Length: 447
Image (cartoon, rainbow, N blue to C red; front, side, top):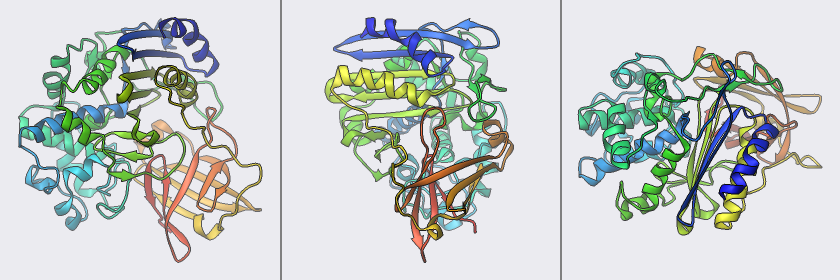
């Protein structure tokens, strides 16, 4: 695998417009690593195998680990209300706040608004202030336990539970309970620490189809650290975290198996998990496990195949990262584990039939608002940011044409970064969808 990575990585990132990537693979007991490209197009610094990239929401697996260590010590019961461990836990819906459990937070089934990237502070109190000041204003978008809807805010709550029970800030817990025991050296829990290493900067396109350019900021808000806004590692050190799960060294085997057992099904939108365990994404009927991560212009991919002892890490800093994942990680998994990644959906040669009244309308979350219309028989989505944080990701409104994929899904007529986005419409009431499932989120209809 080492020779294949050495021979192909630079060519693949050029093909997919990715400024830089770092890869690490564990197979047959051997570790292979490779890096190529430019970490920051403004400075020209080249990527090396010890460069750190933000791992984004893969951090959620580190937060899950902290929580399950507390479970193992008898300090948390996943099925007791969150308020037993965090009495100050409040939401706009008091009934929901009183009932939500840690298990629902880990499985993204708590149902409250999950994308409140609201800045609090840049200090050790960032997570505490988020729970105190931001959570009480978050609406309940889906009843607790009713279905999967990806929730960043829920993992901030889990991070705060760990802080309270351990009496230390989240970044310190990461070092003391995970990075330290594993001997991980290239890890940054805050931006200041990233300066100690060759650190990647994210790159974003100012508009669809345009070349990527250096992102205006390095990270998302500090308050979202337990959900994935800050943590950066090298590919090799993230691989060491994966190996700890294969070897059951951070948690015992029974606990690991519990984390990997399916908890909730996920609507099919292509390139996403089929099911969710406790914190973990589940693919290929349970043979393939892991998590993805995305921050401002950085994307990370982390996969394990436990029955083959295989682990794969791909860290990137912009461009067509999903297409790079399909080609590079797809090759690695095929060669090392005999796993074929599913083909991404594409628009059908003959558009399917879908009821316009099912999908048309406005769907509003705390970051984005999507308005689905039909014009001259064509389906269009107008996407608008509704917060300053969202405008970092999408500075201007975006209009996209979709075609019916089946009776409950639309697919983008044209690819963006080589992939066609899929929209799924869920829980129809009187012939109209109650929710838009997009990017893993159930966004409620607002008109």
